[in-house]
Image (spheres, rainbow, N blue to C red):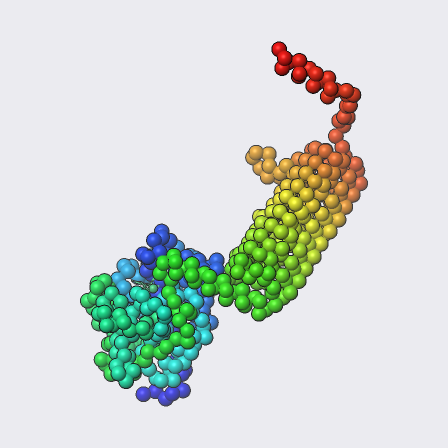
Length: 473
Ligand code: UD1
Ligand code: CA
């Protein structure tokens, strides 16, 4: 037998099983591609595994292999194909080719156990090595052992085998300790045991669980190790389980950001994505959705009813009640809302302000520029310290192409202005109220449409008389 420290130094390989269809999800999409906190289940398991720095990391794909592989590409990950889904034992066998020549321990995890932590896996591997085990299986004692495989132990506690719920007798189903589907196995034993599996069970599948009894029969050191808690090792098999897990993960994420100095005024109504970050002393109001790769700085205030996706938000930004902000940037000390919409690469420079019913698409609003009411700004570049009056519209689309509008520094755009792109309004120009601008405006110029209003005294009374006479007829 190897010296203990030699044993500790054995290389670690990880195999993640993700080839199953996930029938109980009743979905057209592979189970491992369903999202938890905005991220595929499998991505999370891959990231947790990568933090153990394995020398090999193999993901077994099968059902919708191409889609799973495309969505979950990551550095150092090798995908292996299980052509037909003939059970968990058959799935691990599909990882044999990429592990050829590998002499260490293989950690096997399922792609549908997303709450698993790196720490639990690291401790499990350390325990396996400290005891110089050939095979270790991680177990748990959930309140409801449901469909999980049951762990059978002898009177002295030694594990003897795992029985699937479907194959178990009533007495065996009464056992509370379950198989988490996480194993650490010496590679040479693993692949020789897999070659000897038989599909003699209720499902006619090659059960990975059967290698436990095989190791015990061969007299090899075999361990069943309880996990530190059971929620972490729960698998997702149905939409209900996915929903419960989302609740758990959202709670964990909120706790993480509260510990980092973020205030949530009504924590349970804030939804966070796995990739979102929030700076300290930022206050987040009720019903706020922070999705995708969103980074929010410190000392911001988000009143609530906000949908924020893939945005970069600086420090000390004020987001008033009710906004939709996607794929956009908000500079330090800027503000948006109430009822603002930014999308498609919109940029608010520092101290810029947009307000009620202002939509900004693929446009830059310069420093200290304001557009506070009722405007559509699309495909535009606006300089600094400009003012965009209520009812301003960039007419960026002629039915065929999008055109750009350029507005210089300190430009005053009067209320109810339409800017027909392509168009440049140079610095310090002044656009009078209710102007349709169709040509470039030189710096410092005034532009207005010649259109004199007329006043007709007594017109209303005359009109009313006329209408009243009509009704009598
Ligand atoms: C499995 C275990 C069960 C354990 C449970 C823990 C077996 C026979 N049973 O049951 O003891 O309590 O996990 O969650 O191992 N997969 C493939 N190819 C296949 C079949 C499955 O890659 O041919 C993958 C699935 O995508 C999934 C994982 O293996 O990621 C587990 O498969 P699943 O069908 O969910 O197994 P369970 O019935 O949950
Ligand atoms: Ca499962």
